[in-house]
Length: 110
Length: 115
Image (cartoon, rainbow over all chains, first blue to last red; front, side):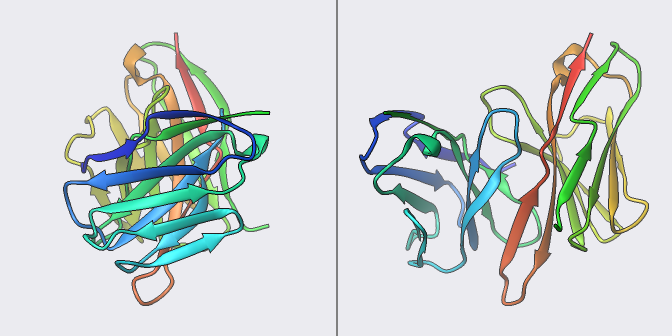
């Protein structure tokens, strides 16, 4: 399968701070999805991106499809304690296979 | 609510004893996936069905098999579970919404323990 690397691997931030994370691939993708996963649960879809340069928001979350098509970025503004979890990117070129990034673990300190 | 359902949420099996995990969906999506997720790791795609067409990932062990008897149901069979197969198994579905836009939805997962 494809190898997608996420950075940073983990983050510890104060409540109210903004968060930035990214996902990079050695291959180009046509679709990027961002998920949040909490312990013992399945990933929950947050944002979907389909076009290079696309910028999409979902509440306090904003994600961008990198112009090289090999990366994507997720920002969370004004973090709150319930933002805690592991954030995964997933990429797809053609076909139906999605490949997941290594994940960014977010801890928000009240 | 339309959703992806996995049963059971927790499954314990013995080393070498075949086990089947179940997934159903009410979304009427034509693609269904099985992922394996080990602790602190990313979900790893095992295989997927596009309608009735089975697509295996090259590095999926032969010990893992799947069946999709109809659109709504998909099963993961582990023929001879080893200790290394203990993991969370995630079922997902997707559908092309047109213009290449695909959303993928996950079930809550089944945590498999091998004793």
